[in-house]
Image 1: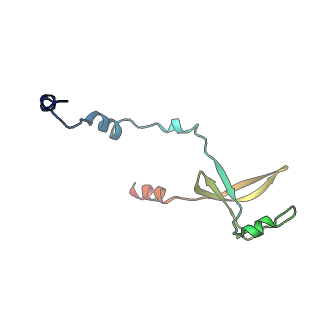
Image 2 (image 1 turned 180 degrees about the horizontal axis):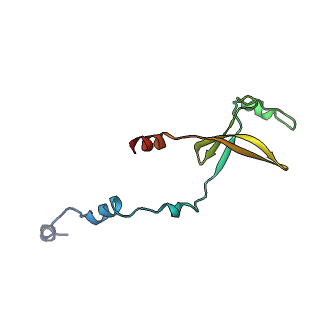
Image 3 (image 1 turned 135 degrees about the vertical axis):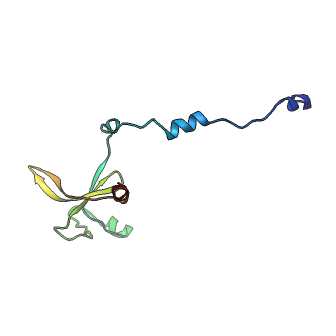
Amino acid sequence: MDSAEQAAVTPRAAQFADFEQAMTGATEVPLSMLLDLTLPISIELGRTTMTVQEILRLGRGSVVQLDRLAGEPVDIYVGDRRFAEGEVVVLGEHFGVRITRVLASAGTIATADAA
């Protein structure tokens, strides 16, 4: 570009009004769109910490002691969030978990207080 072409170019601010209106406004996603969403569920029986040497010594029949007592509830995670507590049950030849308490998250409590 020569100096005559540079002088002819007039800079102006970008206009994003339509984009901002679409992002902040009237387009809400209906809850029904989320009902088919699949989330991973994990059940945590307990935890422990071991050295690499201790882990390498584990073999068939080894027992790993966890940080929970027998009869304490197990944690139920949905995604990476602790969602509920439950108790282990036996269903025929399978294990299951009966939910005994659904936990309220801080966001849920804040939303309920505001209402």
